[in-house]
Length: 114
Image (cartoon, rainbow, N blue to C red):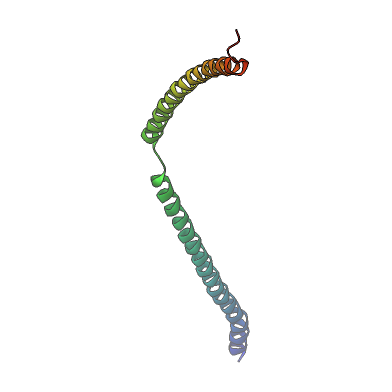
């Protein structure tokens, strides 16, 4: 009878330890599954962001496009300088014509008395 008593006492010690071990493993597995699910969601979000960034970068102008734009701006600057020179020349001609017209006007107003 003493052996059964020892058996039940031993079982009373070992059984809670087995239950605790099972609970620890089961809970750990559940926490691990939740952590993995969160990790998968985060990786999916990162993948979507990276895809959007890659698409945006592909649509951006490259160095050849920027070089062509720079050359076009230089060409436009040259054209603008030519236009400025022509306009300056026209302004000088207009000033000269205004002086001539003023003299004619003054002559007519004076009645040709000179």
